[in-house]
Image (cartoon, rainbow, N blue to C red; front, side, top):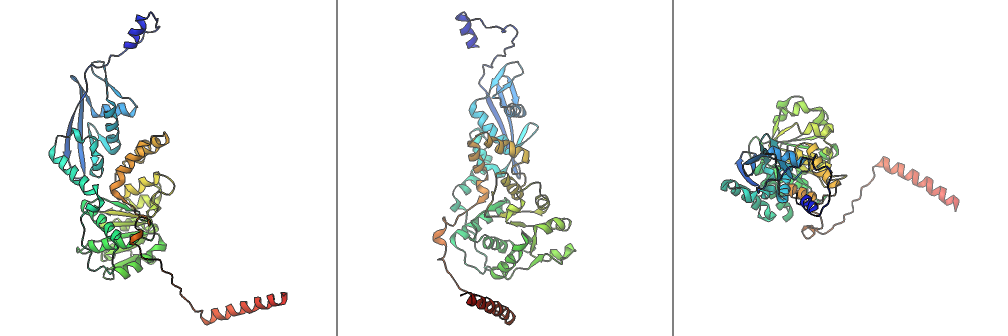
Length: 407
């Protein structure tokens, strides 16, 4: 408006103003009123923004931001400008929560993003709950140490103990996680330690899903480190009675059999489901992903040395498996993160990193090099059986005679 007045004062003619409807800006600075409730698994947020006597509901703010507008139309015909700081904060909250009518439900797995509105929260009990959870994960070393189960037949290295403590911490809060240590750092052993902890409670049941080639590796590791555990490999000639499967503490099966025997496995409720080489479920449209997300579990852990192989979209499936609903729909994940990155929004990557940080643990060999044993080389000699020796000697003599004749 000031621009038009300046033009007029300088005798500059502007055409079309008589047909243009120009809305006035509200003279009132916006204020926000927040109402928070802590539910079992989520925070419930109700917000109302006021420009004087004009009140704007949360859904209207979301509609404006979805259209890349930093303003809302008010009931008196004026326009209310949303401060840039508010736009940034509300955008992050909308990406982290799910709008339901006039409220926003934010999973408690997103507590580390709540600092966006922390200064506006006037509910001491909720602030205390958020701060307690943030404090526990502020320093990884502050996670309380858990006693290593006596039945475990292994000596854990310090970083493996830290990994076990982290896994147990997630279990206590019923949050899933991705253990993404480098290959060779003992991810399986860390999980077996957790299984020992879990199965110390009578009736606890664990399902391990792995590529077929790794099933017998799990068998060998269980027999080596936890021989007391009652395990069963659900593979090949398998049970078709659910009661027979209920007898075992640990079930080992493949991704293929989760698909084939989904109806059977759905009848069981597991205390823990482990997906080994979890990049196998990176595609949300795959039969593997759809089947494994239908299984019932109180706690889920994904194991992988390569959580992201070809793109960030693979992260969605694995995080959504361990913490169902973490990213809401894939469509919203794509719009909020993938599309924003394509547009060059570098800040969105930092937001995504902060969002998943408490639920992904990755250590490289370089980071724990001092804790690793010296490299050892061992030569194993394997003698041939008589029939192998006979064939070997025949070929050796044949080619030796051939070469001698050449020279």
